[in-house]
Length: 167
Figure 1 (cartoon, rainbow, N blue to C red):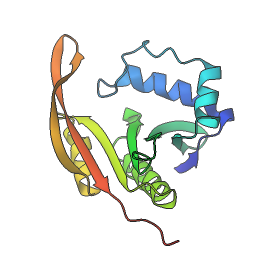
Figure 2: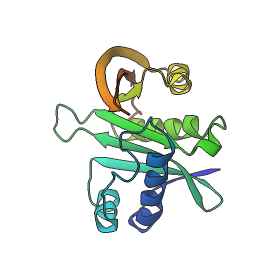
Figure 3: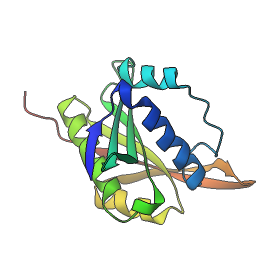
Figure 4: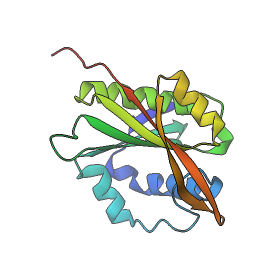
């Protein structure tokens, strides 16, 4: 497995991966077929939007996992990076998620982000365990924050403070 920072030329593979993830698990925000991002829009997201960073995990040439960081746009929030992570089910339990989080954590340290934050469905025990192992703490519960198959689900709001690199 390799991890690379996405470039605009990866937009098609990134979109394909996100669409696969949307259809494969109910732990992602989008439902299957709901994502309407075009190839041109994805290219811009990767190449032109300065508060978004994307890293992809590859198995040979196949994109198998992704972590997206959304940095605060304004000065008072630029130190904070909201992350979204997804790994194809076939690769669960193989350290892909852990590796992606480690890479984005290293990126955040080198880019003056002091805080990582995320949300996770409370019953996604595998992910919650991983985030705890990597130093994330639960800050609170977002009650009934998702509606999946006509059922409401709660999410944990989790965060981790990271050290800054020496300047």
